Image (cartoon, rainbow, N blue to C red; front, side, top):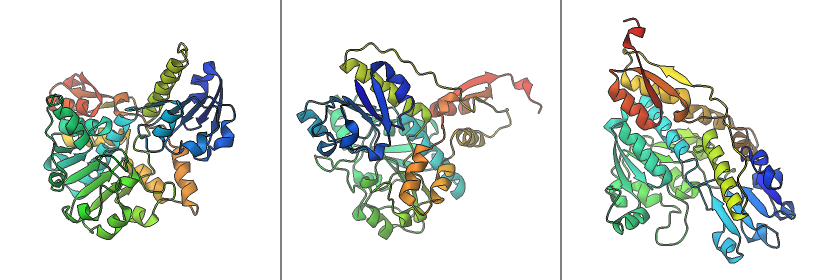
Length: 387
């Protein structure tokens, strides 16, 4: 069996080797001629999978190592009886950690504490629910807007115990973070959900975060309506990799679609696709991935540490969004190639759960917050430290 895969799917060649011959290619450049006799196609978000790519091919199974599906023509796959799998939830933790890192940076710059703000979460699925959990651990008041999820919840007697609000209620939030798929039709389309009308009703000093899809925001309207006091944190853009350079210049933080790019999340995506392919072809899974030790394994804080300083220090030690922002702003003349190169050569970023934090036993409130963010917390003897 021949397998064609995006070269940015980690361990794909070794993991799938027992199933057939694996050919890795640049994802954005995969075309019909590349498929040859391949029966399996494994992609990430940069490959458009539709009739133009697959017509006349031997592909029987398509897998995307991502949670977004807007690059996949699911109707065409269904019509042609081509099996499909995605990696739903694989990078949700990573994207949520991105949001926490970015908001802590803005809070430090602007001189406020996150628990002083109200955060509106638009979309509370895999990513949004993790953002909600982490923000709640920090004592942040959150309001949720997610009509499809609310509809499902109402039909299940509100088992998730969440209070949902309409879009107008979200307009009052100090911070708005977007975690929706890009959909152009149906009952709840999200394309240009953030449009001129929406933007005109926001608070002047609102903080807007988009880690979902670029098309969810009307970029022209954002450029026209953006106020000097408005903060924008943008990880996704329309027309990637040919992103709007003026919008990047005006963004408070801008990154090259890497919110979900933790090494742990990408490996989970590989594992999920491998399990799905094995199941479809009725093969017994044989490959196992052993992750390397993270570069940062342990942090120790004494009893004198301020809780907010400890949280800021722990998060930034694991992941500081400013590094990716600075990298994107060093754009070369060929900005589109530079954008893709940053993604292709992205450093191995590990998740909070890879770090063990040692605290004195009396720091129980801080321990609860750090655990809520995803860190492993252990207690050490208070006497270890000098006063």
